[in-house]
Image (cartoon, rainbow, N blue to C red; front, side):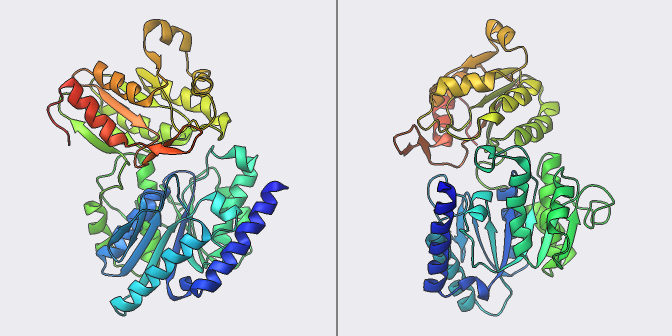
Length: 409
């Protein structure tokens, strides 16, 4: 009941914001990207390809907004801004492209399930809607997986063209919810039953992991639909560099340190399975889980991490008012042989994230790989009394300096 009232409040604000700023999205080709994992990378891939093709393009994602080549901060822990902030950004994008000339005008918008459910994106004219995947996340809010999928498909229903992952477990459910909407649908995937697949469209990129092949295929599908030449797409994929905090190697001399935003069981599985085979030494994984959020995913995250990591260091990740110890215990419950790991010293629980990162980097030996996941680009930490400054990269740099690291990349 309370959430329904809040949604009405957001809807009223979205209507007023659109009215105030003159429904600015109507002058743009808007591409919305939603999904549990891969949204930010897919958004930035599409942006990079369209930009490489010479189009006027802006983007709004969890790492910030880029409008007219200028970067804008969108705030703490924000992916899709509030209706007023969002429409203000869209108006800026519209004004930029109108001043920039007649080239095609694009806006790529990362769109969360919360934003869709709360009508924060009401009034936006979506031309293309992209769904990356739907895995275990946000069930504290959506309650059931079916509800979660249904919310994600709202974007596809709003768009003229739906771009969907043919290989994702949500595909059949997505298809049943979108079917009969008389819209163009493009399926991408690794199999030949997809409209866009590596056999029909061979490509290369410097991104690691199978999950990034899906992100690339989604971007390929969108850009081909938008009229970009295949040669331009292939060239742009090779030159593409991921956004800040996505598979970002910050140290690679005697051992490797990577910072990544992975914070779901699926993201863990995809990332860890991709990097594990190339590691000569031990995999040391530092992570936590957000407080006052979906607690059912915590043991699943622990289970996945224990499948690949030789050392696990549990710590804080925006605990809010929830006990960090309680959160870590929830993760620990899913870790295979966790009691044996504690006795052996391969499972540590360090509430202070800075101390946890220091400990992980201090224990690293030649050939080891330290993965620090969950915070990445975010510039604040929430301990229940508001946001306090946090910079994962600065903390890692300090830990490396304290250890006597030879190089900070």
